[in-house]
Amino acid sequence: MIIPPSIGLPPLPRADSIVDPRVGDAGPALLALEDGTVFPGIAFGAPVAAGGDLVVNTSQTGYQEIATDPSYAGQVVIMTYPLIGNYGRLVDEDQSERPWLRGLVVAHATAAVLDDARQLATLLRSNGIPAIAGVDTRALARHLRSTGCLRGVITLPGVTDPSLAIAMAREVPRWEDQDFVAQVSPTAVSETGDDPAAPLVAIVDFGLKASIVRSLRRRGLRVRVLPHTAAPEQVLAPDVAGVVLSPGPGDPA
Image 1 (cartoon, rainbow, N blue to C red):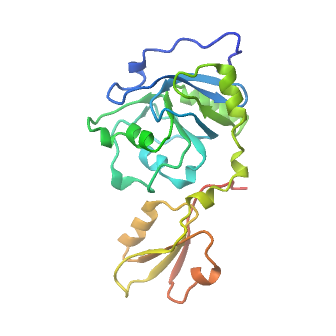
Image 2: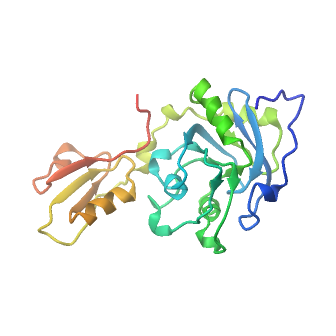
Image 3: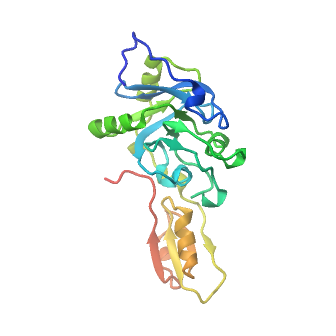
């Protein structure tokens, strides 16, 4: 919704109707866009402010994999499916060692597990990632469909001044001006697989998801992961039987 600063924000529903009490909320916050659009909500991630380019994901499941996918580095992810967090989190399903997104936007933050360590909110909080619930994410997705990519910011819990939030959004660095591949790619070579007779596949890591390595290993292959700065002679070494260029963050253009 585009709200003139002089009017103020409408009241939110009860916080416990937006964020499951088992998750716990941190109070009111705002999602503000650089074009002056503001969405009020309830903070439930880390108690910090952060911003980035807004990107929409329509998946019904996989929020844990999305949060830990290096391809989302520097972005604020909007989940259009209304219930996020409802089946918990399994550490073995993480796609990297930490979340890379700048923030998470959901309609309802839910929890079907009592174990705090298995909750999505715990993953976000322990890694300094803010999250906001109570946003009409489908309306926001339609807005972005008509405007194109926009920068946005999730404010600190308790910061509900629309003018301040919009100004913060406009100060977020442009995503395409930042080198996120260098942030997510490793600095050293690593290998997995003990059978020296198995074919060796080299992966150039531009933002590698762990599921890619697991899929190759299930097929009986050895895997060598190389930094994005690897020289051609490293990638095409004599013992390499195949090469994979991983996905990752960055402007497709």
